[in-house]
Length: 101
Ligand code: FES
Image (cartoon, rainbow, N blue to C red; front, top):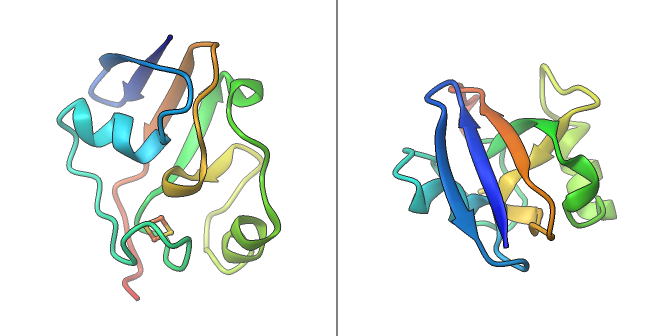
């Protein structure tokens, strides 16, 4: 189990290990858009991970390549639809922008 804290709303949700980060964010009631339906092919689920990055599944090549196409990407960036939560608590920031697809 891990607690996911979502900024800027500060909502929290407790989820089982293995839960997709995007699913946790949506389950917490946040309006996360999944324009490509979670295929890792857009940027609508781009979040910054402030705490618990090591709890998340490793960045895979496809996600890394997609992140490279996103303006404003940083070392804390993840695509929420591609990251699975582990056992440690995670704090993420929703970025609230999208360039569309
Ligand atoms: S929903 Fe498109 S990359 Fe995550």
